Length: 264
Ligand code: PGA
Image (cartoon, rainbow, N blue to C red):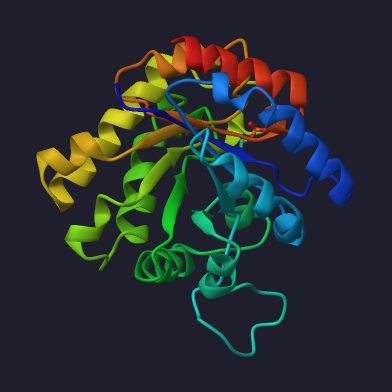
């Protein structure tokens, strides 16, 4: 069975490097018991130096790697406050999240920027985790009829983010379906609906590449994942893992999540 990919997005947490190390130690202390999991930890950049060695040491016992929450598309230069792919690689970073809704909607990232970042990540040997998802759960047309915007938004974001990416490289992209309304709200999507978006993503990828790639590409679900609902998402045949925010910085909750995933 393919390993489940669990990505811990710590966002702008915790507040000190001591806490960051403690969180990592407590989550990974039982790591060698966790089966069938590939874990990616995405801490804030400033913790990379204290955390990367710990992750590297553990990686011989357990499949764990370091991820970044963002990067710039240029390799170097006058981009105040930004981080390049090369800088990430120096810390052994393997994955980079691109197009997270908090970057799209709070920091104003556009599909064009995300597209450039995906291309740079792939060229630099980093695995992009492309986040896509609709903003509102319910949309109604002028006559009050419910309309499904999820499909249109996901197709549009996916097409724009992967525009011009060499076909042979698309298989290396991980796609995270993260409905924005589910992020940090405690209102996770319904696993059947998440599966239907995942199937839609595979259809779009199949058109861009071929059926084999569409079947093989990794698709994650993200948005209020916790120990109570993760099993329902991962039991779905087309969902290969999860992008976990809030629950990934709660050591007991995240350990429980890893235990559940390894028992599936
Ligand atoms: P959440 O965040 O698990 O706290 O909803 C998920 C994410 O933002 O990736």
